Image (cartoon, rainbow, N blue to C red; front, top):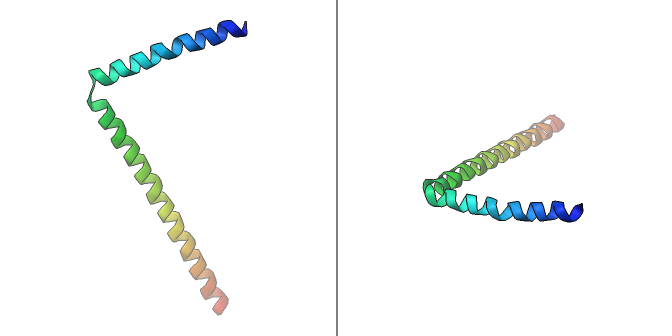
Length: 69
């Protein structure tokens, strides 16, 4: 049983990679589109992290100013 499932997974892998490479050849803008999408997601993550850092710094400043009163 395990041998048949491993042979199934190994046989499906090459066909999916062939299908993917055919898709890239037929649509050259696909790679650029994927690249732009990944770049946009990374930008959103980075800007979100910067927002959290600024918020944390604000809390630190407020905490210090309250402690100094």
